[in-house]
Length: 258
Image (cartoon, rainbow, N blue to C red; front, side, top):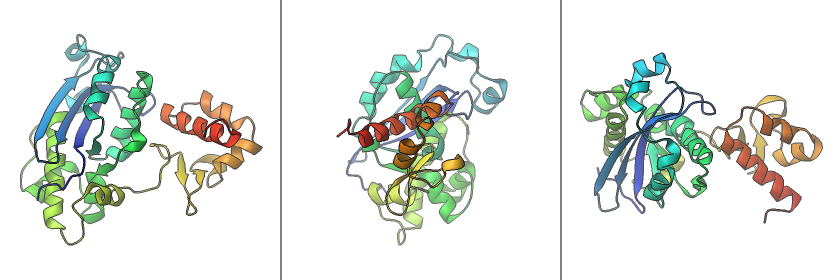
């Protein structure tokens, strides 16, 4: 089944130096843009992360320091990439919990204010886990009856993710709606305000902390009553996007952000 799209959707996959959203960096990004008319465009870009790629990461994706030493940094491609995916929704495999938060961090580090809040996000892994509980290779075999060659290369994983989503729509046509708005909501496992899930919405739609001693407490209330908490979070190793959201809430509550 082909996707029913109101906007273009970009499926993407990141290969990185590790799995720490705050500390690790992109070494390869592959994007597959699917237009509402079904036209597909794919490109893959190697990125110099500006740091050593640990051996354990290289063994997974096959990219070593020597492979990216002459490649552009993420800052060097950030503006062009942001322009390419402007106006597009985003899709991936485990993307809501890893790829999207890390991409948001990279954009902020590159000083490109790409507004993620305007996107809808379709996480094919979440749909898969709600339906079948498997991995991407197993999902590809299960839904598409194919073996995933070159697994853990960004281009192969990106194309496989797109094919799996279309096959999911075929298989679960009576349960899944063929539109990105539904798929985005269905593939969301939480109500995150920031991508990493440190701040979420409660049942009343209020922003609350989702970690530590203030878990479940109103962010606005904590910022009012615990005067050092904001500074502590800014100085600690939280994602840049989390700090950006926290600052927006603080400014809004103080009346400086309308």
